[in-house]
Structure formats: C-alpha cells, structure tokens
Length: 275
Image (cartoon, rainbow, N blue to C red; front, side, top):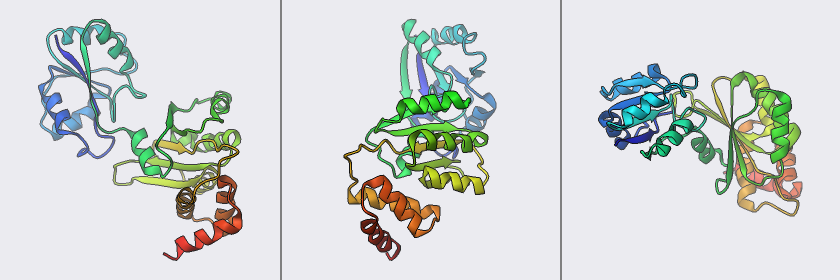
C-alpha cells in the first residue's frame, strides 16, 4: 500500500522547495495536481518525469476513486498550484478518504503564504487565527468579522485585489483601527509587504491600485486593561513610518491603540527617526 504525501510547493520563487519534496515527487507513482500547467513548470525545472493527473475543485470528488486506486499500488503526491495543499485548496476530502481506506498520509512541509506573511508582518505570532478568504458578500463578511472582533489573536485572511478596498472598509467598521500588514507577490520579484494600520492601508490602496492576491494580517483585539510595552509601541511606530503619514497622525494612532499618552509616544518616534 502506498502513502499519500501532501507536498508543499513554492508560492513564487521556484527555489523555495525542499530536497525531500523533490525526492518524493520523483519517486511517487503519481502526482495529483490542482493546476497541471503550473506544476509542469516546477517538474520541468527539477527534471521530474512522474505521471501527473489533475485534481482540482471541480473534479475532486469524481477523481477520488482514481487516486485511491493509484495508492493501492504505490505512493501518490498531492500538490496545489502553490503552497501547502489542503489550505484553501483541494485536499481535505482526499485526505479523509485515504485515511478511511487505511492508507498512510504524510505531510512534506514547506512554503505557506499565510505563515510567511504572518512572520514578516511585525505583528504577534504567538497566537493567531487563520480564516482563509473573506466572504464575498458584504453582509456575510461583516457578520464574520463581528463574531471575531473580541479575539486577542492575530488574524489572517486572504483577499483578491478587486475586493481589497471593500474588505478594508469592513475590517475598519467591525474591528476598529488596528495594526495591519498586507502581503502580495511573496517570494517573487515584486514582493511587497505594506505595514501600518487598517486606516493607513485604506488610504494607501485608494491611492495605489491593488494588484495580485493578498494575505492580510490584522492585530488582535486589545483588552481594555492592556497597555502595550515599549517594544510593541516601537514595532507599531516602525510599521507606521513605512506608511508615510505625518508624525502627528502616527503618534495619535499609536497612542490610541497602545494605551500610551501622546506626549510619551512622540519622543519614541523622534528617537526612531534619528537612528
């Protein structure tokens, strides 16, 4: 009996693949790929000649029996078009079916856009909540955000460029102004990570047309009794400075978020700018 390997593949730069992932893709009897055209580029780069079939959102149920049959005689590697399969990509049903049939399922870890954006955002990483794509309809989007507005975890979402401004409007309306980062084109030539607050991001993307798929990282809810420590205030000031707003606006926002007085935040800002 074979093993179903969940193989993480690059989210942009084709060099971001592990040696183990390359070996598994070469040795598997079959590769089940979300986008065979995209995966073909990766296979060609690393001279991998394993047979490949499509396994995507529209055929994932009908293709289950074929993949399970392939597992009965050897290993199968599941890949998405980019990143870790099963995260907002087809995979959950196949994993469940393989486990139910008695096959081993093994992850081959690697690139993940949500985790990459989180660790580069400058926001707390010790506890986070990943919720995938925000709902397309405004009412559903606001209902979701209202339900999590009290969570202290850092929040991670995915969003398309044409819905980004609407999403920022609703994030602001339901969560209030919070520390924020928006990452696009991660690991690619035009990689960009905007760091600031929700309000400054809205102004930024109203002036600069959003392009590419976005991973949004939003600071968690601040407890009423919570006052930020100096390190967190400094991180927020550094993020705000990248947004390019006037010092008075930066101080006012950070003071409002941190529980510090403006007269105590301003010297910190001056010190950072003079370094």
